[in-house]
Length: 540
Image (cartoon, rainbow, N blue to C red; front, side, top):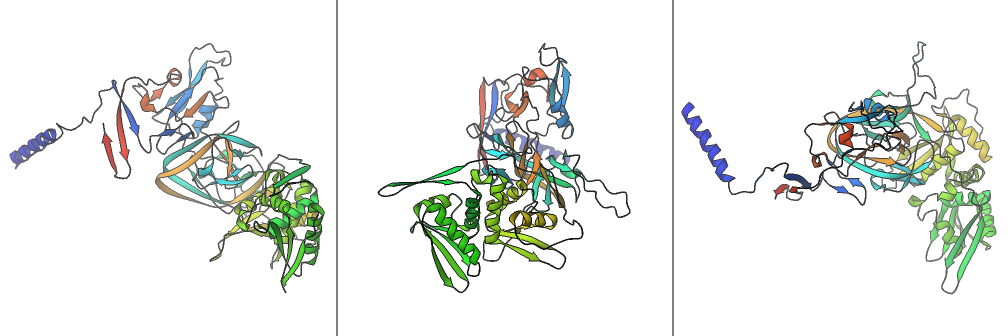
């Protein structure tokens, strides 16, 4: 048997050699030939600034910018411990210590600090899935300011994926294990009840595995205020161009609130219609008066049946004005000049919205205010507007069978009392103590974690963005870190324009000098093409 096994092995090896004798060579004559991979996982779209899943890239070091502050090494210390500072005499004025970063790619995880592609990012203003964000778009950061996106990252991630549900946010945050989140880790009381203390600090960027149920995650309050006194409307008719200039008074904002809750547009009839309950006489009169005052035309009030009354204004200018707030209930939005308006104006906006689509909810143990909409963007915008007014609110998402998703903006406890006073709305409610679970400062809303889950994934697509002048963004309502570019001076940053395979390198440890050297692209390239439809690889 031993002799037969030997003969069989020789035959198989000989046959394998003969079989490949007339086939294309599978190996490279390195370094004369370089590997040039084509296809998914190894492409970089320079126009969009996107590296496709699997494309890792490398770091670039600029000696002229590096100050030796060691922030890159500190940021990496909590992730992969792949960066260490080395002393190299360069004689640069800005780096008196002459210490520069070096990267060990045997440790580097290429910062898988990413989130699920469906994560909804706060844009300027509104929300949008991170997969739809483009370079140059402004998004909300931890400072409450909107800053432009400079780069988009997309990777294939294998490891632990965390799901963190925050109280008051409709969707959980899904992120990788290395993705840091701005949080306050609440200490446990020394009393026997072991409750968590209500603290607003210290705030810190925290890994998901270091968080617990009850810890606060932070939502920034937008700071920008736009004081636009006049809004101009222009409509090109068949025979003439109509123009109108409206003063952006608080009463106009109340009318906008009525439209967001009860309004609709008719393109054919060039009209705007507000639908109220027949018993809402005060709202019908107020909306009619405001429409007549701003558009110089008296609307038609029509009683449809016992429970419904329409206020209709036939005006092309009114149609053009209200169309900027969205056509159709799911598409209602707030444009910039309304979203960033002063508190006085936004108070009237919320008042019109509440009177149209709001109610008081009475329960056995509590009483609270509610505003309901089917527009996901509007619900998130109103939550931020309320925060600008100093009021904490929650969003609960409901999925009625056969109907559109519904978003309920709820205001509880002391926040409901405060809002009712601002809206001059009767709300008799005197809780014995503050029972809500939220905190607020002038900069942030502090929301507790409801639950934390984790699962192992393999090759899951995850995304991240880089923001100009900041390393944070707001996704699914909470502040999170973008550690891809940890250097505040852009001296050391990760780029996916070059692959490690483009470099002549004997080891995985790159010194500062190696990080600063561009890749050598001369020489032959050995192409490997991936055919995703057939599932084969073509060498040539």
